[in-house]
Amino acid sequence: MSEQPRRARTSGKPYRRPKKDPVRILAFEALRAVDERDAYANLVLPPLLRKAREKEGPETFDARDAALATELVYGTLRRQGTYDAVLSHCVDRPLGEVDPPVLDVLSLGAHQLLGTRIPTHAAVSATVELARVVLGDGRAKFVNAVLRKVAQDDLDGWLERVAPPYEDDPEDHLAVVHSHPRWVVSALWDSLGGGRDGVEELLRADNERPEVTLVARPGRATAEELLREDAAVQGRWSPYAVRLTEGGEPGAIAAVRDGRAGVQDEGSQLVAIALANAPLDGPDRRWLDGCAGPGGKAALLGALAAERGALLVASEKQTHRAGLVARALDGNPGPYQVIAADGTRPAWRPGSFDRVLVDVPCTGLGALRRRPEARWRRRPEDLEGFAPLQRGLLRTALESVRVGGVVGYATCSPHLAETRAVVADVLKQHPDTDLVDARPLLPGVPDLGEGPDVQLWPHLHGTDAMYLALIRRTG
Image (cartoon, rainbow, N blue to C red; front, top):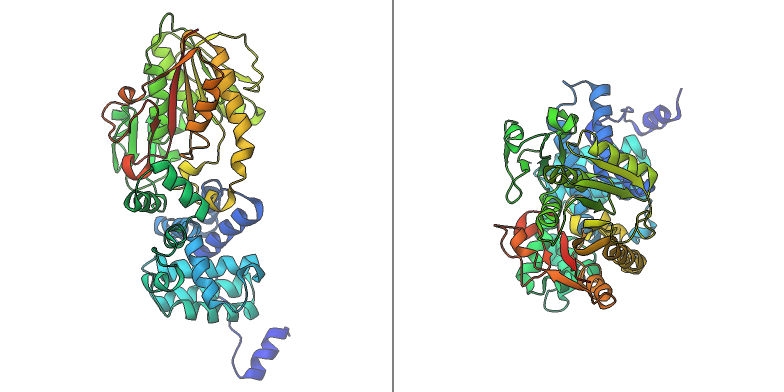
């Protein structure tokens, strides 16, 4: 006879096996993968959802279960900073001394209590059951005690207790209330150059679940075709964009499965469109995507190049990512070439191209809506690590374009150290260049600032915070 039933009989209570809740177990497994393997939730979650549907069956694990699991994972990651501040008041030791799996369960419970409409009793009992399954009975008692303390107040009440007053420490107040690291709050504030209202709107937008945006690749699919899908509406700014207002699985759409369309944020689409439409002097026959992986922009650029009869060369340093680029470009209506090459050590002669795009590696602070865990992984010192590469890629791009041609420098970050600082530093060494006003190349898009470069924002444009500077080589 097992040890647990003997203990249960001694206490007078029959032993009850914990109930296995597939939704919460899945959410816990996703959080553990993010924590242990530095995985990204948007990559981990889809296979876990497929596995759960196959194991439990579509009647037991349906679309509502998938939606709840997704909300639990993304909501917990987005509000991690806030929940950590609350849990610190409810745990009798520093959070760093709590085992990470236990902290993940506590965070899931805190999100259900403070960030969803799940009733308090159900949120506590379901999380304690999860703890019994994945942690054991002993630690489940600890989880129960902590969550009962969390349940004593709502989110607004907790924020009044754990966030410093705005007047005393504006950045720390916003960091706790809106669940961003303090240094990120400071950087975004500097980039916006505005007051409290603007930065709070941005921080709120970072915590909202973004819609899925599709791109119809010209010559292969049309927006009209994608608009026939359920809950599909036209994009705000890009003529090729279609938004799925109720989420859904893009892989279930025929055009996406066939590669004729793809998932691509509208800000990313605008960067490619602006470069393609930038005025230049002379021929327009050879285009380069110098940082092409994983292939979204390359596929759109390739289709736009095909309309002009131009060749696209898509270069990507990492071989496996070059394979993703080749897959994205497969079926392109015009000529293209995919190569595995280091963009700072080009495999082509100087002045070979008419248009060049470099969407450089960066901190990814512009896509925190889609990758909420990135805000907790990045550190200010990461900027120093990216800086030489960003400058090197832009220098090579300027050397790769012919006189009269145009370079687009893009990055999915609004941090000034990754945007204007890079462009200013490199252009000091290249006086034979002019900045092109990018704003007219984004027709209808409001709030683009004083130019000539463009910074997009989630709270103003509904896009990732993409940055674009267009540079013409003059000599």
